[in-house]
Length: 301
Ligand code: CP
Image (cartoon, rainbow, N blue to C red):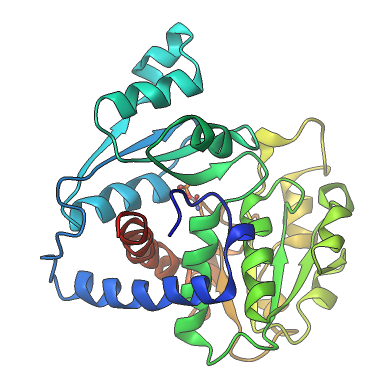
C-alpha cells in the first residue's frame, strides 16, 4: 500500500492490471447508478490545480463524491497563492484543515513529488510539467482493455507533441509494462531522443508509424510549452501529422483512435475521424471517472 500515486514508473504490471479490474467494477456501478459505496466516507479530497483542466479535475471531484468523500477544489486564481504562498505551505495549509488526499496539477516537473515529500496526507499527480500524468495513462489502458483482448504484442502509435507530453511518457511506461509495442511519431522538433531509451521507435512519417497499428493516440499540440516556433503553422502540422481517414488506411481495420483531450479538432485529428466509430475519445472521458474512483479507493483502503 502506498501513500501517494505519483507516476506509472513506480507501478508494477500487476498493480496496473488491478487498477483496470477495479475501474471496471466502478464503471458498472456508475452506469447502474449504484452509488452506495461509502469507501471514502469521512475522507476529504482537494484538487489543487495550478494549470487548467476540465477532465482530470472534474472527474476526481465526481469520483470522490460518488464514493462519499467531501470533495472540493482550491481555485488558484482566487487563493493565497496569488499573495506568494508557496506550494509546500499551500499543501500544509490544506492538510491542517483536514484534507486527506490532494490531487495536484502543476507546470513544474517534480512538483507532485515535492509536495508528497512535505505533507503527511496522500498526493495524486494530476500532471506535473512534462514528466507524468499517471491517472490519464491508467484510464487510457483501461479503455484499450475494453476493446482489445490482450496488451501482448499490441501496436500503439502515439502521434504529436511528444517532447512536451507527460501523457506520452506515462503511456509509454504503462504500455511497455503491459507488453505492448509503442511507436512515436511527430515533427523532429517535437521529438526527444531520450524517448528512445524508454523502449520506443520514433518516426517522422506518420503513415509509416501507423502501419499495422491497433491503436493511434493523438496528443494535443501544447503551444503554451513551446519556447520557440516548432513548426511553420498549425495548417502544416495538420497536413503532415494530423490523423485523418487517409491515415487510418495504413493501420489495422479495427484501429482505435484515442486522444487525452482537449482536442484541437482539425489539427491533431480531423473532425470526421474524431466522430467515426474508430474513436473512443469520449469512452476515455467516461472511464476517467471510474479509474479515478479505483485510485481513490486504493489510497484509502
Ligand atoms: N486529459 C486531460 O488531462 O484533460 P484536462 O486538461 O481537461 O484535465
